[in-house]
Structure formats: C-alpha cells, structure tokens
Image (cartoon, rainbow, N blue to C red; front, side, top):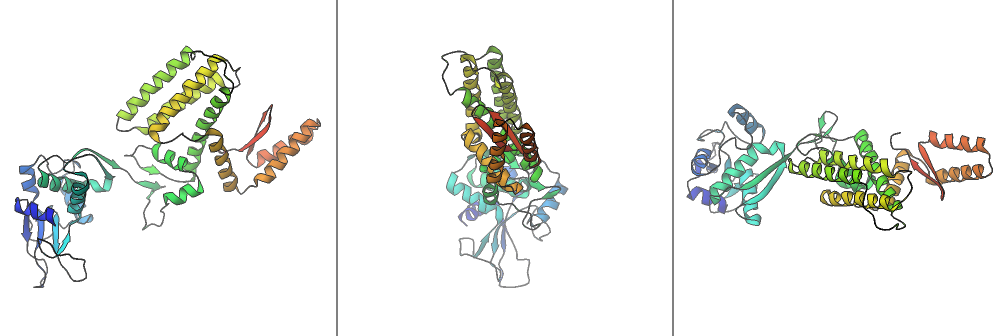
Length: 382
C-alpha cells in the first residue's frame, strides 16, 4: 500500500472509476506504463521482446484486464483494487482494498533485498506481463535499475504435457527423493538447460541413473587405486592435458548462460579418459597421480553443482538397492544364488556355475568376479 501511494504521489499511477454499477465499490488504481517509459530506463518489451498484439493476448490470459474501460493504455497493470464483496481487503493510505499481483512482488523484493538485486528468476510464463510490470513499478518507485540478470526456466514435461496440478501429473520433489535419491533428481534437472523444457519419465530417470553409475564407478576405481600409496609422481602428460582441456570447457560452459548439459558432457569425457588409462591396469605411482587428478576434477565441479559428493561405494550400494526394489527382486535371494555359484566354481562344477550365472542374468543381475570375491549389481539398462 505504501508503494502504491508513493507511485501515485510521483505521478506513476492514476485512478479508474469502478467498472461495476455498485455505488459501494470505489475506483481502482492503475500504473501508467507510458510515464514509466518516459521517466525510467525501463521500456515495454524489455524482457519479453513481444509484439504488442502478443502482449495484449497474454495480458488477458494471465490476469490482466486490457478491456477495462477508462485505462490510459490497455496494458496498464492494476496497482490497487478497491474492496469488493467476498474478496479480501485491508485498510490502507490508498483506500480499503488489496494490491495487484505485480506490486506485491515489487514491494516484497524491495522490503527484503533493497533497491537493486543481482539475479531474479522465475518461469518463462512470468516474463510477461508479470516481470516486465514488476521492473517498471520497482524502477518507478526507486529510480534505479532493478535486477542485473534475469533467468527464466522452462517447464517440466511428461511426454508432450506440461506438469501441472490441473492435469494431475505433479511429482513432488520429496516423493521423488524418497523413491530414488536426491542425486538423481539433481542430475535430471541439471542435465537439461534451465531455459529448455525438462522431460520427465521413467526412461529419463533410468538414463540419469546410468550416467551417475558411470561417474561413481570411475570414482570408486580411483579410490581403489589410491588405497596403497606408491609414492610421489606426476600424472601422465596426456591425461593431465585432457583434464586441463576439460576444465577450460567446463568454465566456458558455466559462463555461457549456465550451460550445465555441456558441463556434464565434459565431465563424462574425463571419466572416459580416466577409465581408458586406469581400468584393469597395474597400479603405479603414475596411475595414482592420474587417479588424484581425476578425483580433483570431480570434486571441484561437483562442489559447484552440489553433486558427486557422495562416497562412491555408499552411493552405488544405494543405487543397487533402489534398482532391486524397483524390479521387485529380493537381495537375499540374489546373494544366495551368487554364493551357490561361488561354491559351484570352487567345486569346478562349471555347468552349474554357468546355469546360475544365466539365471541371474535373466533377472538383470551383473556379476563381477574379483580376487576378494564376486560382487553383483543390477543392470540399469534392463
């Protein structure tokens, strides 16, 4: 209400007589966009770049009232709506009523964050009319440019449908994380550019689980290589150059409007390069230096992304348990079959051993034989 009064006092607002026949309904206060264009750095279309016909259509669709008689410009937004029966209302310096949509956000931002802010975000459907009007009203009130950077995210989609309460296809973050893991949700979101539609579905989730498994398996390999210190050494020149090249790519991607998909593409290049020089190779001081260099890349950019910070063995175990549950399998039964195969191999009953292996493969279980025993995991791609 105080913000509305200031805009009125400074010439940015005007009254429009009630659009009803009731004598009990007072006039409504509107913001004058033409005055804002004249007196501030703001201009209509600053963020949206829309044509006027598009603005008029979106204003009508998104809570505006371009057909309201008495307005100086059909696009002028409501600042204060006089009291109507059945609607919430408060006493204020500009009369009893309630604020318009845009001035609410403008006033809250100003109250908590001051005259100017660095970054303002929101969905792409808020660019117009909401954010353009919020800028105009804030700059009219303060006389200063409002936000340095605007970031508008696209929608989450299931197939060709936008996620929305009205369609009944909303997935709550808490429910997703209880079913899967917070790391998986982060990867689903960050592996799509924030300005692109985010497709959601079982196939997408499975792909992200596969990707995370690849990264964490490489981290687990690095941890294994580093278990017994072989002494000081420098990483192999080729791998060192690859890490340096991919670091530069990641920095450029982050500077390019937070291009997180490109960040992950570079991370997977480093994973691939590390696996090529480390998997099934003799552990040497140079290999350990390679492992340290690899882990440093993952740590540095995982910290920025708030990801890839889980202990590798623990995350992979959690991922395996999720897959067991999702497939309706029994971990105890799987372990019994693995133990039976181990016993058959020990007794040189290879026919039985192969039969058990095939049975497990039919369940989507992969076996990894190692000197310390056989490990099993669910194949994600099944």
